[in-house]
Length: 561
Image (tube, rainbow, N blue to C red; front, top):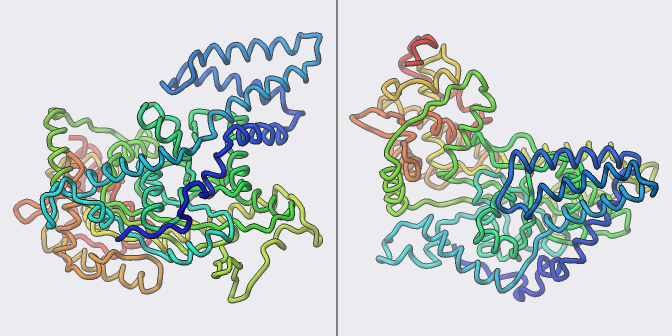
């Protein structure tokens, strides 16, 4: 792809620049609105919960990025809170002072910043980084050092109604809701949006753990990212974070929200989204209308399709431990670490890959499609969504009603994910192979299957080709019904070349090969990784298409070799 012209050429006019031009104003506004949203009848209990949770966090889960003397700070807050109960001064006044102090501290932490000079420099750095990650060391165009920018942009495949999204940009506040698989997602999406859609930069949330790295912290804190500390579970922090979403939307800040909340541990598309985030969106739209501000929130679902995920090994281990508990038995493989790194680097420089960004059709907060003018369309007719916030003909705030709307929006976004999912050769290859392995041992559950030795994992070449043909045939049918999307490789390559291409990508970035071919048999070095990539096609009922020529009966005891 080529770089797309910007719809707003001057970076000083970008909404994100306008929002962060006076950062302290945003901090003060966030502090004020969070405090105003607190139920004073519950203040004492809320402060106690916060102090207890924060003291526990400081002791059990510290980060380098934490403020200095963090533990001492919360100990002092605890002392002041206890003193407020015994003081002659009104305890409510002292507790309100503590509330102000804590919320302001959270607001200063959460609110990011945007520096145009840093953004321009970061764009160059990211271009180099992504060229290194996704381009081969040399290309057909010559022995360039990771190729040129045009070669890099060819590695990003962007699908969807981009012109429509660009036209709607000035019709409302745009919120892009992507799937989430890697720590690279937010940076990659931000880069691709600016370079390949021509839209201005978006704000996005970044886990506070990423700020432990000084260089990354420097850039992210100046590129519009706001901080999310997932260690903080107390309701006061969550209230401040949710309020930031509401304030930013109301101020017209276009944002990238990961509605799943965190990376997909299993490798599958998100099926359940965080209702809290959805609530802030519904509440913001409600607030728009209550203030007689006729601006629409525009939702754009986005599905990322990777051939590989760098963190796949750790993510699937985490998923299996959490879901399997005592049934999951992890196996530690030991090999020379230096040799592992050498092999990783060799693969990194010898195999290119690409990323597909599939944008869904823009919708309103109720899942209705939007026309060129930003009007909501339902069953072919223009509707006024403002009416959904009325009771007896009068605009109102109704928390219970808005929660119902939030669940409905979450369902619509999940439906869009399944439709916009672009299936790659690696997905089909991994799905087919794992299903065959699983059906070879029908009496084993998943966790027993994962303990099988490598020698037990083998599939005949002809069988694999036949099963891939059946899967692809079914996927083509689903794509005709607009239930899924297929990459061009799946449409034009035969089954043998699909498998070859899929294995090339699956094995490119992992030390242990999820799937390889030796002596006419497909084998697996790491079944957990294969399972992770297999899960991308979960939910399409494709397992019905796979059979196995051989079935074996093993006991659980036999799997624990």
